[in-house]
Image (tube, rainbow, N blue to C red):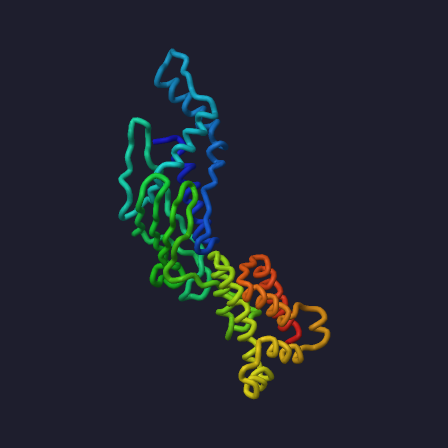
Length: 295
């Protein structure tokens, strides 16, 4: 077994934990392999002791630190095999050493669609691993420790040293801030998912929809639409503004202004990530202020 097997295996396991706990569809991470250089000198000393004991009375020659680090990096670049997988490439050892590195499938924290909250999830040991070398697919199952319900399944793609979240069943649900109105919060959540998945233009549309659908829940806007069914979003925003105190309008972000900028990006087919993120922050400030003013 390679002297780096444990540290590389832990680095890979930690990368999977980060990916499945913190990242979203189509985002990626890679193992933190600085642990190899950090432990190289210790491994080097271990190799020296091993060579000295196997060749007593002789002066053992052991590799420089750079070669020891290279040994660890070569191991990390080989096939990754999850412990307990029901199907995986057969671990092989050749004259060049291990052609694989085993890693523990970690526990994670993610959102449970049944409990409607973020809870610890433990792996269910029926994972599948396909491919070899740096071109692999991992099918992993996780069960919520709160409700013990149907496992959530993830598809992870390895390309080189990166792993990417390529699929999830059921689809990811993001909890929305409690300040946002529940009746339309799904549009905000879906906008976040689209943005994280690299579909920012779709996220812009959904964020704009969130604002307009919120306006349509308000009685003054309902009354206007009853008289004017084809009222534009800008006209609905004008009615909404009249319901707000002057001090509120002077101090906090304007929903009609945010709506207008999102509309401009949508009509120009402009996937503006900065605008999306700034708009989310302003929307949240606006609704926090509504709570403060008890509107």
